Image (tube, rainbow, N blue to C red; front, side, top):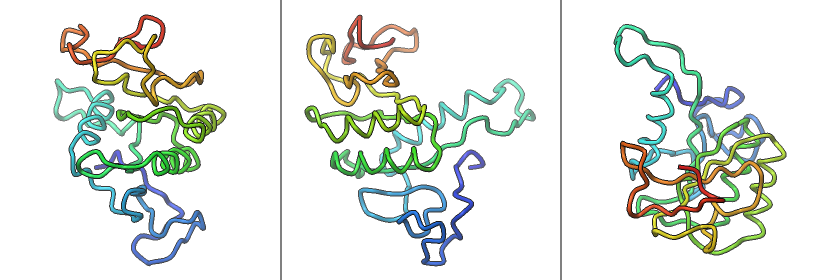
Length: 183
């Protein structure tokens, strides 16, 4: 809980866009699927990934060693509980996160073809010096020859990552690519 990003320019629950960024009461992020500030993770995947990020700053062998978070998590949601959403909402989420200071964007989602507007949003994130981590995909495809988006956008800050087993061996379902995907 103490690792959640706080928009200090926004007064919580007063119904006013205090920071004039176009989002009312976005104290802890924004839900672009529903158009509100309710960013609860109904699928569990985002919470799982956030827990891994948060866990990298903890000394797990000493429960009394509670360190301040090195990384804060900015909840930005654009998919529903079933993984449905739009590219337009994904683009809005990228612009929101970057504009609010995010330095690493976790994009463990994918699907659809090439989108010039999404490409431009990722370039915007690159120009803001962020890292755009993207899932390679879960279709056992070679991304070197069969593009998967957003992981296949040719922007220098895109880091396409494969799914691995606990032994760091590629899973049977993960996409791969010697020139495009990191294990």
